[in-house]
Image (cartoon, rainbow, N blue to C red; front, side, top):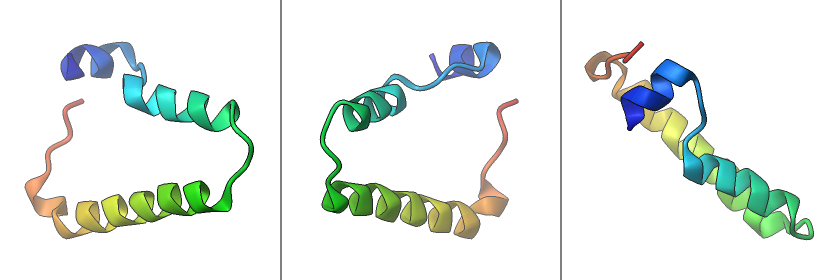
Length: 57
């Protein structure tokens, strides 16, 4: 499934669901902070593991 998403350049369903969920709710700073925190954690993990990761495209 991941290869198919990479070939067709489509979004992962949970990512699209997050955007849909955020657009249908009232703005809440705590949820926004959690999402930003998760993005920062993933960016740090990517930076640390960069030499072990491969680009599938």
